[in-house]
Image (cartoon, rainbow, N blue to C red; front, top):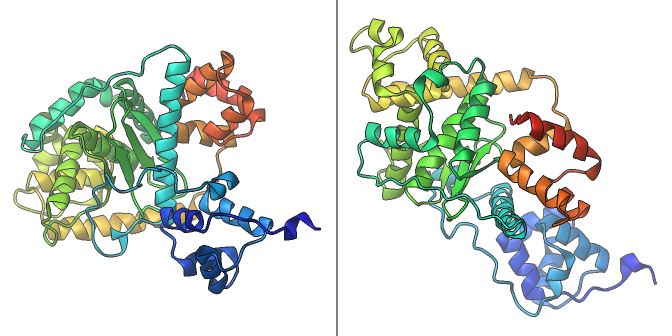
Length: 394
C-alpha cells in the first residue's frame, strides 16, 4: 500500500477544534487545502476518513502536530481571544487566521521563556509598572517613562528611526516585558497586541509597520500591560465608537503619544510655538520636524496634537489616511531584504533570543529546540550569537 493513500483515523472533534481555533470556516479551510468543502464536512462528521497525506496537510494548515488529532478529547488549549479586548468595528472586528497564529506564537514563546528561566535556575524578571485608567494622560505618560527609565535628553540623541526603535525596545525588555514582532500580519489586521500575564507580559508590534510606528505600538501595549489588560492595537475613531473597550484604546493611544512627546518639551518646541494659534491643520514639514525631534512617527505626533486639542478629529483622520497612503507607496518602492538570522533575532527580541542561546549552551535544550523557538535553521547559530553580542534588534 502506498503510505500516502493509507487511511488515517483522526478524532473528528479534533479536526473541528483545530480548524475553529484558527478562525477558519469549512469553506475557507477547503479552499486552502484545495479540496471540496464536502470532504471537510464528512471528515469532521466522521462519515469518512482522510488519508494520512491529507491529514498531514491539515496539520500543516492548522499549525498543529499530527499526533494531536488522535487525542481522545480536545486539549485544554488557550482561547486566543478570551482575554482580548477588540476595539474596532467593521472589517477589523474579527480575528484573522494570521492574527490567531501570531497570538498563539507569542503565548508559546512566553511559555518557553518561563520554562527556560526555570531550567537555567533563574527567576523571570518582575514587571512592576501599573496604571489605572482614571489617571490623567500626562501623569500616566510620566509613569510609563519612569517605568522604562527613559530620559528626554537621551531620547533626542537617537539619530535614526531604527536607533530609536532599538532603544525603546531594549528599555521595554529591561523593565520585564518580552517584545516580539509579528511578520505575517498586514497592518490592517493589527498594529500590535499584548499579553498582560505576569510574570513576563508580552508586547508585540507588526514588523510591516514603519519603525517609528512600531515604537508607538510598543508604548501603546506597555500602557495595556500597566492597566493589566491584554489588547489588540487598532486605530479608533471615538466619535463613532464610545464603548468602554474603545475608550480604553483611545486612552492607551493618548498615553503612548504623551510618553513619546512629553508635555513640557512638546509645548516648548519651536514647531508648536510658531504654529498659528487655533489652526488645526499641520503641514508635513511641521510633522516631520516633530517626528525628528521626539523620535515618534508623524501619526503619533498627530495623536499628541489631538489629545492636546491642537487639531481636530476631522483633520486627524484626513491626515492619518494621507500618511498611511504615503507609507504604503513607500513600501511598494522599498528594496532589499534582511538575512534570515537578522529577521529571527528581530522578531524574537533580545531577551528571548538570549534565553534560547543560554539554554542551548547549557544543554537545557537541543538544536531542534533552537530551530523551533527562533524559527531558524541551526546553521545560522553563529550569526545569531554574533547579533546578540552586538545587541542589535531592528
